Image (cartoon, rainbow, N blue to C red):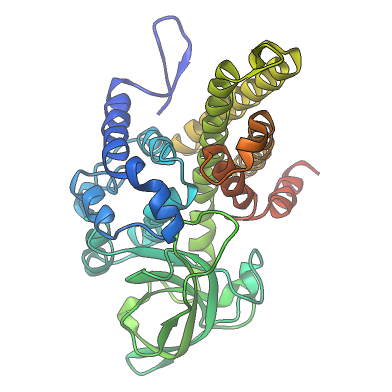
Length: 385
């Protein structure tokens, strides 16, 4: 929760938050950064990284003690996410953090037995969890999803497919939106479907513009048998559970966008201080100075706004409009700053070994995932028009 210092200024991070930040930073610097380029080229990172992150408590930050987590306000998770993004790979951050969009629904609406089976092993890093909503026939139009789940005795028989699923290729379980009732929002339910279920298949990992270290897949259900006890909450209430989830997912994407921009700016600033052209450092050219000033200003404004919205969410305020604004603004900032960073680097910024090249590619998906920019604008319009 946000608080004020002795001078009355708004603060978001205490000494305890900073301890969390340092712990995550040490993990990233030791276990991730030395290998990230290799993992990017491989299109995945070792599964044991999940378990290592689970063992030192990173995956459990912000979750209740009863499921093996370490409870805390929203800024503990923000601090951890920012440091994970400092790995320099949006794909790594997205896949390591796929539990954060997969398990909150189970925690809020699941039974004690479901928490034991589907949450604790994920927080421990022993299982990988993913969220499966998007389908080949439509992404943001959740109310019209077509994957069906028909009850037959003690099982649901699931048919259909999901696409663009982060961690989808290696996930041990997915929190999956299915149609159990009539058309529209009123007929949607949420099932946890285990990858070992009969009739469950995945594509090979999908090749993407960015987020290379993230295994992304299409998932197919061919008369897939799912036990009835894997239903989360009430049947046909799933749409509303998913809508609850989107606010936190959009916050997470805004945080990723701001940190992606921050990394690109830091790289560009460092390069501008080192690179010489026409007999002087390029930082001394007014055109470069002004680019850097604009980049720094946009990041500062976006980050502060995102933190403020996060503080209100943490206080229990409805921030549907504001988080949609924050996500859109942060993604716009990230796109612009990463573009300018590549421009400052020139030809070197176009090379694969350059961090800004990766950040530029990784930034592009942020304004698509969790609800596109256009969908965010439709949501905002409902509040202001």
